[in-house]
Structures are given as C-alpha cells and as structure tokens.
Length: 106
Image (cartoon, rainbow, N blue to C red; front, side, top):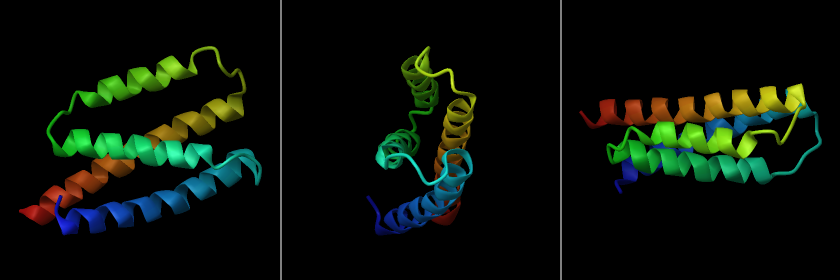
C-alpha cells in the first residue's frame, strides 16, 4: 500500500470521527458505548479494500449484511435514524476518499 493512501485514510478517519461525534451527540446525547466507532472503522477498511481492488459489487454485500443484522432488532426510531445516517456518512466518506485518491494518483 502506498504511503500517500495511508495519509488519505488517516485524514478521512479523522473527519469521520468529528462528523460521527456530532451525529452521536445529536441522536444519543453523551450516552452509549464506543463499540459502534470501532465497528465503523472495520467496515470502512473493508470498503476501502474492496473499492481499491475494483470489487465494486461489495457495496451490495455490505448493504445486505447491514440490513440482515438490523432486522427486527430495534424498533427505536432514533436508533434507526442514527443507524441509517451513520451508514450513509460512512459509505460516503469511503467513496469520496477513494475518488479523491484516484484523482491524486493521475
């Protein structure tokens, strides 16, 4: 892996951290565990590896896995909104970072 991508990755994770902190505070206040943050980092690493290696259909797999783990587990609207917005931001950060990295490489 190139050192310049690592720089892109670290910057995008710092941005994601700030954005998710604000989203979390809005929806959940100061309560809650840090586990979703670590889950998000692992999910984004999976998405980065797949997008950078050209396996674009992994977005469908990712979506199916996210929905599958969410079915009938929570009827709380605030939690569901937090889940949806968090996933959209997470995938958006990855797609934007990969796109900017590819522009940088050319």
